[in-house]
Image 1 (cartoon, one colour):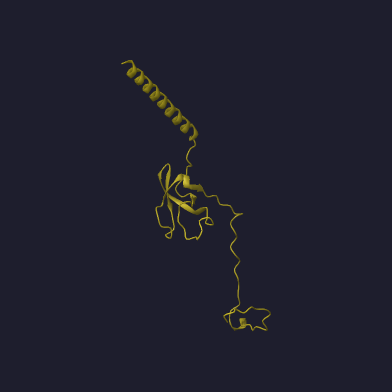
Image 2 (cartoon, one colour):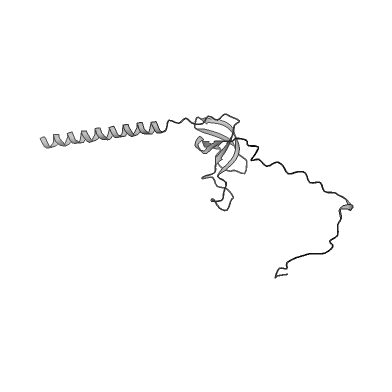
Length: 141
């Protein structure tokens, strides 16, 4: 049965090539993914990627790209963290580290609180309208 022996030999060669290719692909994946996961600590603040999170905004396109910042409550594993979410956010509170990005406080980007507006109170504050300078009427009125 030389034909059967030849067929078995070809199958073994193909199997060897496939296993070799799988091993090479595995090594390439390992080399390309040698980046380490970010190391967050409990108490750190992070931004949460808003992709695949349902919000009340009418358009996903105009929605915020990131939500937060949220405080890390617990490290579940090197790749998963539990966040302190507000009660209004329903859903699971554990997220993959790839969905998180570090929060860095930037005083330039934080608007200062508005100054307190002081208004006089009492009867001295009553004012009269002298005249109306301009106006529009609705068709229904």
